[in-house]
Amino acid sequence: MIKLKHIVALFLASGILAGLAIFLNNQEKAQHILEQIEETAGLHEPEAEPVEQDTIPFEKKLQDELKIISSSYSKRTKRTIWTLARGKTIVVYLMQAQKFILNHGGAVLFMEELNDNPNSYQSAKVDVLTPRGDSLHLTLQVSENIFMKNASLMSIAFQTTKLDHEIIEKLNNLSFPFDLLVPPFGLNEDFYKDLNKISNKEIVLWLAMESTKLNKVHNKLRPLRIHHTEEQIEETIKEAKEILPNAMGIASRYGEQAVKHRQLLQAIMKPAEKNDMWFLDLSMEERTVVPQTCKDFNIVCKIAFPYNPDNSSIQDYIYQKLREATKSGTSVMILPLTEQNLSKIEDIATKAAKQGTSLVDLSTLFNSK
Image (cartoon, rainbow, N blue to C red; front, side, top):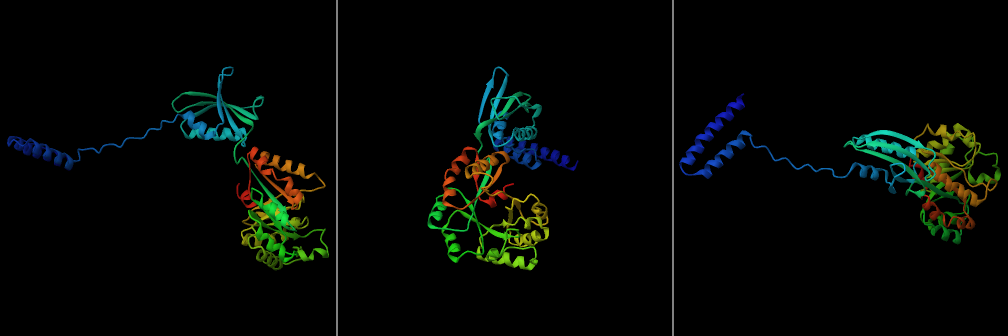
């Protein structure tokens, strides 16, 4: 009410002053007085800033979200066919599409996975109502042989007990990162010095652990035994880390008895956690309690299966690990470090790239998901 009275008074004053100015043949001054009064009364509204309109069609946004490879129209089915890169299952693509559609004001009218499409690896029908009320009748199909980049990850590690000039040269010619499983004890000093000549590597402490295969010959490896105290085990791992300070993880050597013994594993994982290291069970023991014990600590624990000449050839093992990457998303290949084995994987990077698999070190693989 008070403000209204002020506005009325201001207009009366402006009228009088403007009339006086006009009377005095000064119309410009009259207009200036009126503008000042209007501004004081708050009657001038600020000009609204232009709103930037989103001109990208909803269909194009959905295509970009799913990263489709190609789009075509089928007159027979009267549906638009979007081909997607292999690397995700059709179920994952459907969930991704549904989330995007709902978040952008659209609606999913129909969604059904297909099992009889001979032209694709996996496929599904999807009917969509766009935010503007238009209908999209889609068939999503996953390509049989076109893989998305970084669709899966694979690590290659080598069990290392001997180095020479030829092996070092071959390792340095590899075009991808790799891991070396290195015993921190029992090898001569030249071996550890030669490690510095190798580039693109990640070091893993390859520690001998409780096993029925151990005898007096293995004492030089300073194996971690069930009868050792927690303090003894921590001291052994501390000394191993001093010898190989850049080591990122611990891998079991032998150890089929160790991985069944929760108390021993706890004594190993405690210093691993303190040193921000992961743990890799290579024992191939079915009754391992590593996954359960790992839950007591803030570390990553994994199980992997090294090459076993009793089960397959090197070629079959390599093929199996490449296939495992496409099926499960990750794979770990572990080979003895020999010139012959290095020759067998010279083209592994090319084969991996063709199926959308990226080669990374173990730390990257373990922290990826």
